[in-house]
Image (cartoon, rainbow, N blue to C red; front, side, top):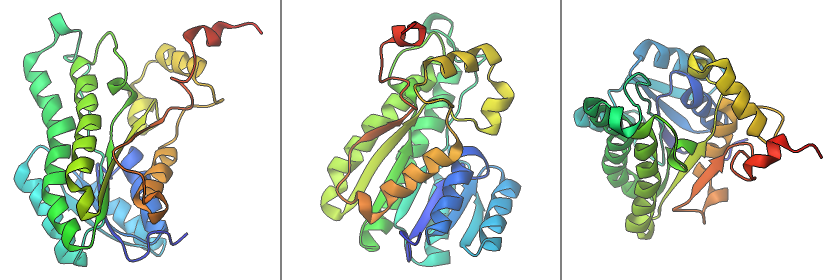
Length: 261
């Protein structure tokens, strides 16, 4: 504990799921955390829970598709805590009824998904990096996805946008490493967030369980702990990487799940 003492962090999409777990873990490690989410009531609840546990946190409403909202979030962190050292760009999502195979894909959905999943990350980096440089450096961790590492039968816009997140992370790492800015991406497989538990069909969950080497699917805390490591000085020589946190899902041949030995 205490790996992030004196650090200031922003976590987007922090009212639930991976963002909520990350915000709480960063705070437990000593960071002062700005909890940002479109759901302000949920963000306030997370900030209150962090304070009740002895940490420091402040909540702010965020529309991750709005440049002014993202800029205001960074300015809020500066006003509240005077610095910024950690940014977890975690907002993302898609409309599974419209984000289909290429021929059937709704083009407006493509634009909206790219705004939410990729442009939001770009804007977070764009507005945070100058404050990070003034703060002596920082670590940016962007949430990608296994959907960005391989093709699928649907969710085309989401997968391509998440591939963009991985590439953007390398560009940020390359352009600002000399200013002591590190940038990495994390690519989770299925993580049992409230949204996954509510909307993912049981046969699909069972398929992921079958092909995951470990005897369980991911938890939000699994990703939160990885983000905390990448934010810490322990990861001080790691930048421009995508860390796949997938329980071994992509480490083996597909025949492995059906092997009888």
